[in-house]
Every structure is written in C-alpha cells, then in structure tokens.
Image 1 (cartoon, rainbow, N blue to C red):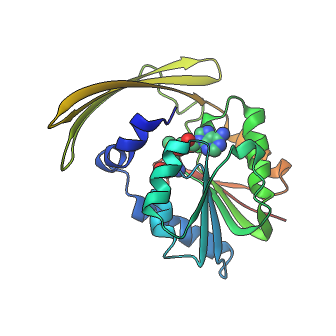
Image 2 (cartoon, rainbow, N blue to C red):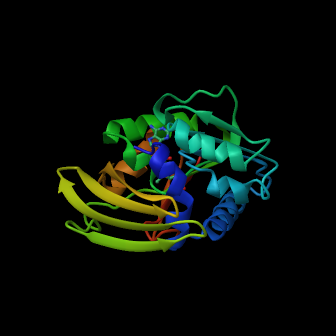
Image 3 (tube, rainbow, N blue to C red):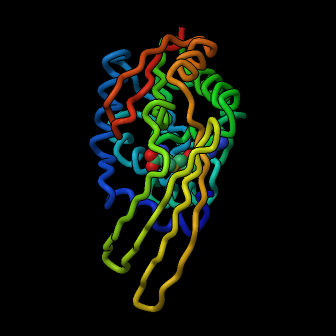
Length: 236
Ligand SMILES: C[S@@+](CC[C@H](N)C(=O)[O-])C[C@H]1O[C@@H](n2cnc3c(N)ncnc32)[C@H](O)[C@@H]1O
C-alpha cells in the first residue's frame, strides 16, 4: 500500500477528485484554535505526501509529519524543506516530544487492521499532546453510512500525464476492501498498476471510546471535511 506508483500520482489524483487541501487545513486550524487559541505546534499523523502540512506550516510555528510509507514521506520531504517528516507506525509512535495539536486526516487511522489497533494509535497520538492539547481524527465510514458495492471512475488530466482510475468497494465483516486500478499515460508510454486497500468499518462509539481511553474528551462533528466528519478531543 502507498508504494512508489501511488505516491507519484497521489496529489494529482486527489486534487482532481475534488479534495481541497488548503480549505481542509484552514478548517483544522480553526477547530484547533477554537479550543486552544495559543496552539503553536502540530503533528500530522499519516501525513502522506504532506499536502495538509504544506498549508498548515503557514498557520503554526512548528509542524511535523509522520507516515508509515517511505515513498509517501519522500514526496512530503521534497515539498517541505525544513519540516521534519518521520517514517513510523502510528501504533508505536514515540517522537519524544509533545505538540499543542495532533491531527490524522483523510482516514489514515482506518488503514489499521482492527479497532484495537486504532485504539493504540489514538493513545499514541494523545501521548504526544501537551495537557489541554487538541486531537483531531478523521474516520472512514461507519457501518450505517458505508455503501457496499460502490464503484467509481475518474479521468485525471495533468500537465504531463493522463490518469484513469476505476475502483470497487466490497464489504468484509468489520472492514471493507477497495480495489483500484490506475492507467497512467505519459508521452513515453502507458503503465498500469493496482492498489488494494482494506479499511476498518468501525462504529462512532469505537472512536469515541478510543479517545476516552486515551485520556481525551471527545465529540463528533458530522458532515465536515470530506463529509465523513471529524472526531475532536482535548487531552486532560
Ligand atoms: C489516504 S492517505 C492520507 C494521507 C494524508 N493524511 C492526506 O490527507 O493526504 C493515508 C495515509 O496513512 C498512512 N498510514 C497507513 N497506515 C499507517 C500507520 N500504521 N502508521 C502511519 N501511517 C499510516 C499511509 O501510508 C498513507 O500515507
């Protein structure tokens, strides 16, 4: 997952599919400052190619990122000179310092294999917060909002390439698999790759329980961001 093929096209694909990283970063900063007006430091967990950090670095004094994929981190580091971006598993995260805010966007936590693993990751995120710091986690779909058998198709036109992407989603007990096929056409050739991703389909209460067990308050803000909402809490 999230190897060299996907990391190379990720920004173009998601921007073309309508993801507005600047608007999302602005909303995140507003939600954080509403709870902690003096917030100056932020850690983005599962930061991917660093598109949110690209905007957040102008809104906070110090930002850092962490992601499991070395390929995604390489893209982030190239676009964020001076910003520390670490390769690490969010379930075992230990950077040895704390932040005023920790965020995890675009459903990064739902790539974990179980609700218990999600709980461990939320605990590690909370462990990187100063007292009163803000934790913000974007979930994937809940069992009642998940659409089984969803199929999607996009044609994406970039300056030097055209990409077609088709995907199908299949429910597996408390998870779902998305199979995506990409065809990338450059002037010098066309290549195809496939990406299979498995997401946890967990209940709202599972996320709220993970926040509480990690020593944070928790509320769910529906409809914001991608429409999947956000969990927001504060470390006690
Ligand atoms: C859909 S991408 C989102 C990236 C970024 N947050 C964004 O909004 O563009 C999910 C990211 O979560 C990362 N990820 C998945 N499992 C992880 C783990 N156990 N620890 C850290 N990062 C992880 C992936 O490598 C990937 O970059």
